[in-house]
Image (cartoon, rainbow, N blue to C red):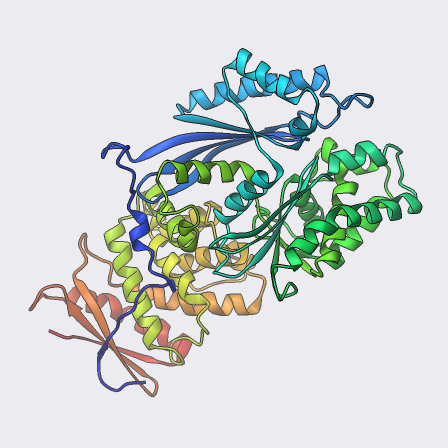
Length: 555
């Protein structure tokens, strides 16, 4: 460590500088407009989904205000003609009428609708679209399999950080399965295969129990159907085994919920949850031994999902085997969110359709800060000081290998969000708001750590009885939270006044001592209040690290 004061530079917690992306390029929107509301509807084989979103024109991101779905079961077509049945068409029209009313109550600017494989393949599919247009005055776009894959990719991209690495995405729908090879820059391969959980159930699993021979036949059928897509992906990548497999769709989320329940993992959300192929194999073995009435009694899945979970799980299992994947991570975002991203791109709200993904973590944190009325100027000052301390005290105040830097930044931006609820215990309320808010691009474990870092930046240290501590299951996660929250405690001690008065910090580490030099915003500014506030941190820093803190004002 340097023995001389050195002013810290490079305080960006992220590797890329996407600051320019935060400015909207679309002159078509009036300057006083800050948001637009857009609804997206995905008319699928098994269900019809609605999301209503608020699009932030400045940040070029969106949040989901409402999500609804209805089991419309378009895949239950006439067995002789393959046409959509009158009852299925009525279910869709009734659902869309309700969804339209909901969307209009939110005063949306636009409703985007897309129809996928069930309508695409039915002889009378276009008749249904014409009927929807005539009766509801809604125009539905009938999309191709490759376009469906592209939109799924955009949806996943909007809620998951790829960090520049190639990913495989699988979406097991009711009538088709999409396999996508992509990274944060482009989609390298978009494939769509005409097998799905509903179509396999309808064509091959009408009996209550599937015999071993029927199951083996299905695995062979699935493998043959997926083979062209897998071969296409393999031809465009050198190292398939090192890639992350991301799964989306109701089937994948249902499998994840059942897997988590088997392990007694209580999850508030499935987004970012990982499970192994070994766990999937174990779950499928159990499901194959159950009758439909028994599967209906399973927690976490609906009756309709219980009917099609076996063929869906067989597709997942076979795909993982063919792709040589031992683990899969779940994404709650898919086609309907992709419709929103595509709309933003077409309206000029994105520099390009992929650029905003690289800064998804930054954007989602800033979005939450604005949502909870955090004073951005003060929180950014705290974050700058926190990163300054982090960068100059490695091996002294912390031993993090770099993974905690982004988490520290996020916690520093959001640490005061609970103040509008209760000032004296705002750290506890901040934990709750962060924990239950949406932080896209972060795994569930990272989400928990960000909330805990904010929770323990003041007052008591972690205790075993605290819920915020109990949910941190891994020892290394608890250690990271302790170290990062200590740094946040020091930097937050400087956040006392309505306007920040400390411009920057200079730090000198020597043996077991850290000297902090405060550089004021204005020359000869009195920083006695900040020095006193920092002195309150000295005892806890000494107890936790054995390090002596000292503070001086550098004019």
